Length: 239
Image (cartoon, rainbow, N blue to C red; front, top):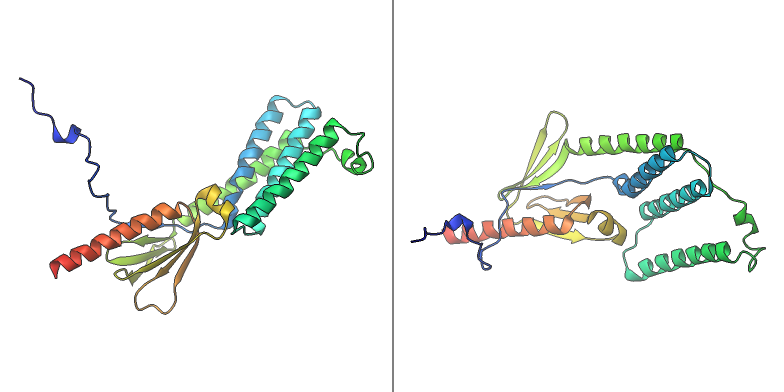
């Protein structure tokens, strides 16, 4: 006779209610955190040139690719791309530029006058440059991440908390009837970090709390909504 199955080992029912969080932590990062693709590219270039320090065509290609990556990353920081039309225009211009560059590489005799100046541009950087630049960016990222541990928001079923400072200064707001607005104003910010702007409207507060560049904003907003909805259902049941 087989032993009865342990209920803990059985799969959860598809109709089981979603897990409600006890609290949701919200962290607003500065936009410099969006430069992480450049940091990754810098470290890859540094390792590449450390292994192969000889100056070759590949070295110039690495430098050109790194400059292109840095340019794209800076464009993301400098401008917002809220609509599909802006995103399409950006990729169109980038595609045309890359196409012309490849065309000049394959058929330089087609446009000798137009690409003569570009052909003389041969960017170069050694491993020391990439290691130095990557080290500076790594320290900056580390400082930003550590600073966010002393400045963040926490949503609980009954209250909204603002943790601030090394001494953990705490400010409390009323969480019931908290209104939440989610805005994704930049497509690239959402692609890079799934981030956006979260606007909180605590009850009896004259001004809204605006948290920009919150990573994982859709999941955070869904968790807060479930938590506050569960609180409202509990209060009505008690009434």
